[in-house]
Length: 466
Image (spheres, one colour):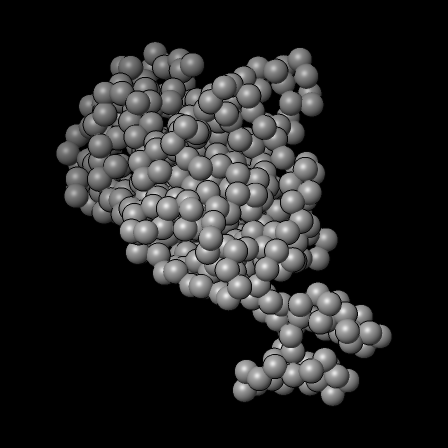
């Protein structure tokens, strides 16, 4: 807690000339965007906010008066000391330096300016970190283009400057999701456990990194999204305004192999469903896996319902010449619809640069495994009929019976969705359940390790101030 030095309580009020000197010193310090006494001295990430708000107030001190910290400043400092409970590191926000400034007194203009700059930089950085995360998601995953809330950070900072309850004010920018709150609660429990069990530190790290990833999400989705959590091997189809377990469709998935076929972390929009799909075999799989077998025995293609298709779309017999055409890239291989098709009976398409989609699978035993990074990168889902029914629930004539029949047809059938559905392929290694359990998952792709390394670099992170 904070102990205010007696000398600071009796500091004289400033004369007008001193006010001018203070304003000039404060303006110059903020304009530089750097303060050597901070843990992370370069504060160019938030200097624009400080310039706007302080400029509106003619560069007057905001956190102290007559050489004393304001009551709001003291309450905010207490709140900053507690940001660890929100998954942040209080050292990043100079709480020890702020406490030392208060305890040593704010009798001199230099200490008053230092206190104001340090407090304001910490306040804006915390506001941004709680609203958007410290790292921009596209810096961690170049194709994870999540929708972003439009927020006036200057307005949030102004509100904090006059708040009678800064601790409560810091709750407002946090994600409103049930599972974010549950994970925050779990963080406190595991920190208590770490006092007697050092193995809890690894779980604490997973929780804090997952809280960071939660903060990348918008506070509300305009369209209910489908979310796939890679390390959990789970899919969640959310309802429009709730992330409660009872309000979402959940199922197991199989994702890309951690060894050489990782499923990318990215966002796109699901546009259509194909019942009884062809499997258009990617050239890489055809070259590495099918052609070596087919060269020894071309009939293996026919037996497994593969066709060779030339550039004109004509089916070629599985001859040595046709195989050479595939190898040369002037013909391709596809697998006919049916129960043995590698995509199963339906696929869900969200066109993307990775050629990744959701699909059924004929190999149901894969879902019996705890670790399910087994695919070439696409995402196999355990209950495709349920997902199809959810996506087509507003389309007349598409009930469960019609869907089941379409999955068993002999030729592909495309059904466009009434409107695109966001799909976010994410990465979270800690999940807090509503029943109180906390699930931890292996960092199979090392994305947590990479994110932790980025966070250790410290401020200024590349921020998108909205």
